[in-house]
Image (tube, rainbow, N blue to C red; front, side):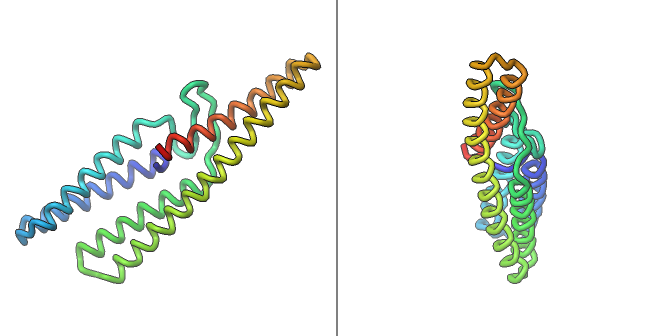
Length: 172
């Protein structure tokens, strides 16, 4: 899943495209187009629900258990945006019968998925690394009695946990 803002935007675009497809299919009487329009609108509704049901806010992942926040890798947001724009181009290309626009949209959507996955992988690796560093550092600081160091390492751990959980939530 993408960040809330772009998923919400994509849901609005898909809803508008579905409504336009529905109107055109009503005029042409093509049942296949009507089915596609309903599927697009249904997908838009689900995207809207998903964008409002996760612990993500914009480019920040928040761990629902601790409330800790971590800024997402920029490829996640950019990839999600490219998916949205690509899907819109593809739909408009289908709508107006422009094969070049449709193919451009398909390619941009695909590139966006790859870009988002790259960002997710980067965030997942960073989250795991931060959690481990925070846990080990916290133990070392506790042994030496360094309360300030413990707090610092706990923050690193919590940020890593939020980053990791943010990616896991998207993948579910």
